Length: 182
Image (cartoon, rainbow, N blue to C red):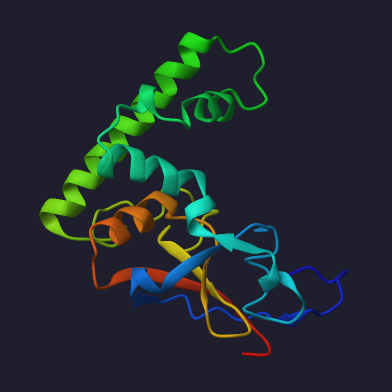
């Protein structure tokens, strides 16, 4: 609760997982800062969205699992190295490369598990509550814009892209925000 802010919406969370069609998620939130403050929120936050195909995670999933590229051959590899280094300018390129390779080996494992066993909730995978500051079970986070369109709003970027690639019918998601006008 932020008492010093003007009330910009209704602060209420259902805290339950809903099953959504991943094919209906076509956008992502480019300005995620206020995504968890209010459940029903007015304003123009929903206009700050872009197509999923522009997202780094989308490109990576496409290149790795559709085109069959190695992560080092990815057109995104340099961006991934910069992201791995973050604000740690003293990190060597070798260390950053090792981090990227470990992360994308985990992504390969996630892809194989979803392909073999179907999509499971984080709770079903015994991964709920790893990060107590994350939204509930760290599921895919979805917002609904003023026109009723789904917007990816945080966690689950790679998982959503894999679900779309595998043409799954339903995946678990947490609804974190709805536009007031909807």
